Length: 208
Image (cartoon, rainbow, N blue to C red):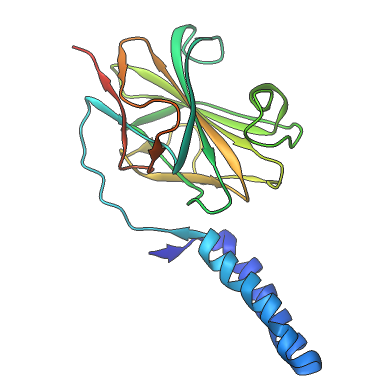
């Protein structure tokens, strides 16, 4: 378990605030102290061992499956597909992981609004960052979508980056959703309401 670097400014600021409030107001410092502990908790990145298997797709995020639905993708796959939408609460790990090994052949950041992540319109209206991954045999699209509290999507990769299966590639700050768009030849192994863990939970299996 470690903390991603994007969390350091938040933790440092709340720690300084805790010291100042304690000096001037004593016990009231418990409030910024709790905030500091939450920031450390939110920006955690658990060490996980992903079992490499090119026939399965892992969840790109921790959270709850909001929907599994047919979807015609015109952004990267350009074909009929299946979309799995995962909602991340403010208590989930917010680091995103690659569902399969492959090269990033597509990347697009889109500015937008900050509607609650559980609303259906967020796919089209909210800030989003999409990456298309190609392993030579199939292509998938993973989309990070900002939520009502999120104000920045962080990406640690760019075009041409070769991702290992389960590798961390970015995060969304403070509440969000992640979408996984896959070809129809992938057997989906999750359903609405399931709790999933990034890089651990198998969301789909590639049909022979």
